Image (cartoon, rainbow, N blue to C red; front, side, top):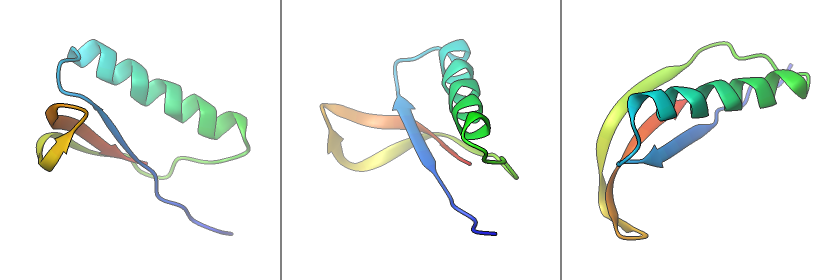
Length: 63
């Protein structure tokens, strides 16, 4: 079995409810495509080294 890691970065101005909705959406996508989520790491709001589309921070989580 192959194992893959996927990191998602959400915009800094989203509410916690929106971030949770994004997490749920990605879990559903993985499950619909015969995948299995073994672990989720929520890193929280972190600073970027450089700006990305004028954002300096983002919510990081890894599946």
